[in-house]
Image (tube, rainbow, N blue to C red; front, side):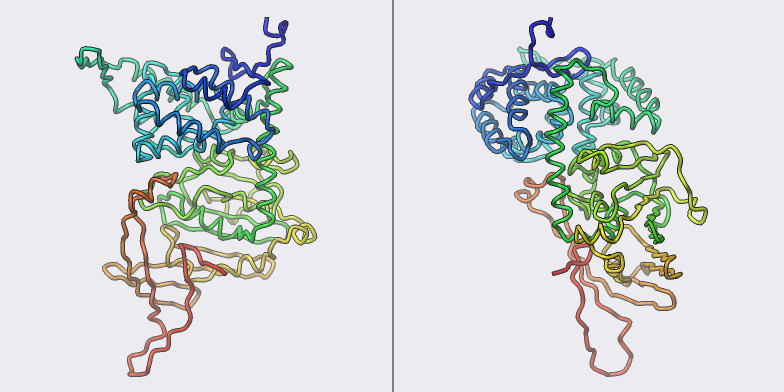
Length: 495
């Protein structure tokens, strides 16, 4: 019927179709919003974005303003949140993950006054009797870094309270929870690394799906839209003084560990390999890599070094096909696939291991571009990049305690280690036979609520620290001459 009458539709899944219109306008989007019409609101929104060809050309600010004005005129109640939830479920996931914060969540945060409150209300409003809805919101939470949207959260909600019109609170045993948790665990266990990557390729990028000609055309348009946004990322990478080595150190410092947090760079003639003894990549880490500007760093009350942005993708300044081997995952991102290659994972069949470092949990391999190619893009030389690593860099990191630079081209190995002296404010930085001692003064600063409201991640406190060198001080009465020191925001700042 749909094919015969040539309706422009987008296939969301095998039972859900979104009707698109070439006549959609901001006014129609606004009208459907005020009418609480889920189908028309989602349809007009996606149609408007598709009309403009790329997110950079789309009227995101106008759409956000329309939503904000709408929210000012309606009660922030269960009906509103239920309406928004069903809109989210009807928008293709790859597109939704790129627009949800700008168009919907930021206006909600402004009115609720707290990001945490907004996240809590959305999660409480989803239908706990609908496993598919819960699964989709858990996936959305992984993309946005909302860690409270999880299986564990379902487990600790054994009772659903239903408020009836006569203000009588009725507690209903949530008998579906054990069944749902079991189903979700089975789903997760069924996703071995290879299957999980194939699912990302299928569900996010439409690879391997059988679609009608119309649906395939619309899917290609959405890919093209995202692709053009990625082209802007590519230009930003090459027009910015990106320090990929420091970006990789930042990522390693934000990881989780069961043993002494350590990082190793191995430099060969044609590649750089980065080894890390973190707990290994999880599904949410892979999901974040397969997206634009998303991270999994939303768990820590004092924040993480990295903010949402280029991050890992800075390696594309020196490499066209970065490879990741961790926890059974063996994938690469290949710019030969076009702009979408920045976020499209390809499975690697065979891994060529370096026996000297075969026991490390995570390995990132960067096959280097030619010198001519790097000069063409104004990339820094490898020598300059690794000059950014000095022993004192370890002073202000959160977790890393050891960084090794193994340069096989020069047959050299530098090992920097940090040792915190128990019961004191003194830190030792060790490099070969040299030991530097530093006296650290730290102070916790609470971040004001009006500042945290503007952040995507919930950061309740920050820390300011001063480090004074003790290794140049003698016991005599000579005047102490302090040399010029660097300023760090975890990593060294450069002018």
